[in-house]
Amino acid sequence: AAGGAATDGQGRLVGMLGKELKNSLNDTWLNYAVPIGELVGSVDDIIAGRFRPRSEDDSLKKPTDAHSLATLGIVLLPNVLSKTPPFVDSVLPTSSAEKAGLRPDDLILFVNDRVATSSDTLRDELSYIDRLDPVRLIVERDKELLEVELLP
Image 1 (cartoon, helix red, strand yellow):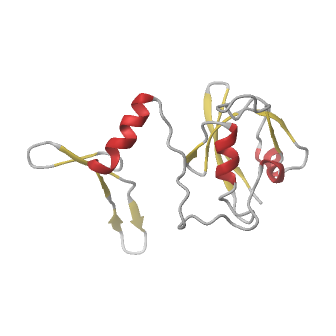
Image 2 (cartoon, rainbow, N blue to C red):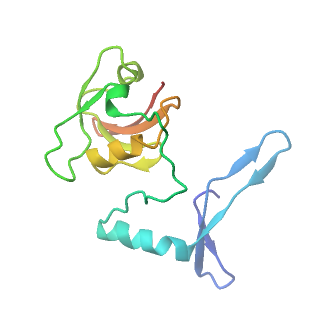
């Protein structure tokens, strides 16, 4: 099952199964497992409340024309602390954000499956997304999680 535990013959945890993919042409399935050794550091950080930002490495190239809050039509609450949460203050008329249904007071939690722990991390994550590509946001609104897709 996707997201389940992978164990050895003695029942010891050895990894975590990833998402299943099905080829609809020939009904074959593809799955993968992440070794537990690769997950331990991240699990420890989550338990301790630490966040690991996207690592800057040469394999991650920023596009020359990336998305930004301005290009999407999103205005956040003022960034007064290093960890100011990315709450939407306003949405510009006729913008991608307005067309997608984003609203003031929405809390942006994820951008394209990457966690947005602060306004700064949201801005940084957007800088890795080409303006020709859509942007998927998971927002919290009135204690509900909603997925919003902003089209270029």
